[in-house]
Image 1 (cartoon, one colour):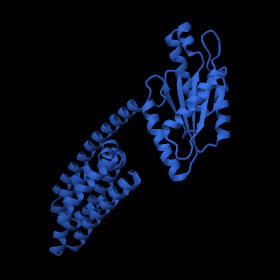
Image 2 (cartoon, rainbow, N blue to C red):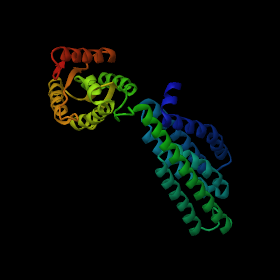
Image 3 (cartoon, rainbow, N blue to C red):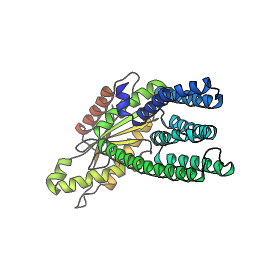
Image 4 (spheres, helix red, strand yellow):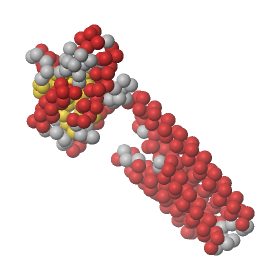
Length: 329
């Protein structure tokens, strides 16, 4: 449980917001019901119920986007309803909701939801003066403070989001080639096995190695070798589908993970990639590079280590048989 909270930011935020709402709003709901303010009490309980339901849904499915959006919308509607019924006393709940919503949805969606909510409250106050705000000054003060708070919360949330995405990119991407890194590969293989067990989807693996790459570094320099590796990744990505992933396995070895692909199609695609590499990767003196490829289809109840090992053995066989060929493991 703690591991999921540490690795899934939005799951942690949804859980935290749900816990706070449940602990803080529930007593108010029963107080409203006990004092005869039934509609506000019911609205509070609805927000608590929705929060708990969304948290449970997020934990069970791993889907945090839909629950976050539902919670954000319900909170905004609930805040409007409470403010209309309680007047100035209800406005105090608007400010914590401003913070909560930025933890539940993207910064832009949160800002738009809040601006719409404030506009509804302001519009209602203009049509029905005195029901929420006792004076025009209160209306102006609330409008200014809520909008300013929303804008600053947006800037903070947007900055946090961009930093988190940058850190994720650094942690999951090979800095030289832009391909996914080895750490990401291990996680992707585990996910592929889990997906196959649940849905029966076929997964294929290609492990390819540039032939005689050491000679490239020796004869042309490491800069030329780096350029070859950088140029290889776009070639691979152009040959596969957008949902397939290219990983740098290490050195001049790369892995391609493909979903929903049969054995014969995997071999045909590997052969096309072999020809594409020979066509597009050219050394400074005009010589062309070749690649050896080992392919393997994920077997039922197979571990990812065994699956990767079969692809590695197929690659080893391809290189022993003369290189520049595809071998199925």
